[in-house]
Amino acid sequence: MRRRSAALGLGVALAVCATAAAGDADFRAAARDQLSAELAAAQRARAAVDDKVATASADRARRVRAAYKLLRAGTAPAWLDPDERMAAARRRAAVRYLLARDRAELGLLADERDQLAAAEGRLTADLARTATLPLPARGLAWPTTGGPRAVVAGFGPYLHETSGASLSRRGIELRVAAGSEVRAMADGLVRYAGPIRGLDTGVVVDHGTCLTVIGGLAELRQIAGAAVHRGDLLGGAAGRHIYVEVRLPVGAGGVPVDPLALLAPR
Image (cartoon, rainbow, N blue to C red; front, top):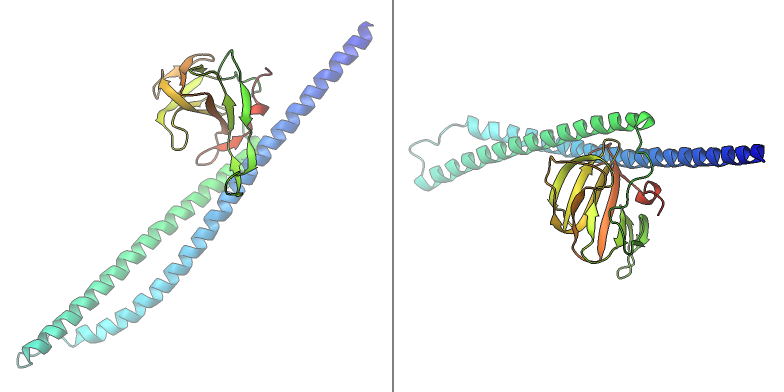
């Protein structure tokens, strides 16, 4: 009987390890997929800017040649009709303006190209990091305790009811009791507390291996820079729903993963 129980326990442990390994693979794949898509977008954008630079440079070269001929003629002679002298002065001024505008435009395009090249470098480095990225442990605390906590909107792709457009949700929406206390899901450091576009008021907490984003709050009890422990009060729910994201700390804004895969069993 003991052998059977031990074998059963070992089987359960192996199943849990296999599930965790599969989840880790999913997280790493999600990070690779998002960063690869962002890198491809940056590369396309830089190629488009390169095309604009080439076109603008060719246009500027043509204008410089034309301007050289005009400006080389010098100032209109004194005996020329005043109206004609004024017209010649306006043409020279227009040429100088166009050359200055072209130079400024090329400068802006060059800055944009440099920024995109830097973004490509960061994304390439982040993509390489995904193979050894420390992943968050399972067992994050639910942000509210007591009362209903039904998941009313899940993570991932969904169809918008009104427009019929295919969209993707980066977190989950929970139905909670009105005014529920919302608490930290793990130990960490508050990176931001305040208005979040599309999520009303919320809090971003850095837990090292992941960041949690909780929106839909009416009252905040923490400020940016505050250290919090699992279960510490962050604020109160503004209504009967709160929004929860979990992000891996890689890439510019982090890579969202399904919070349900990391939350402790209810």
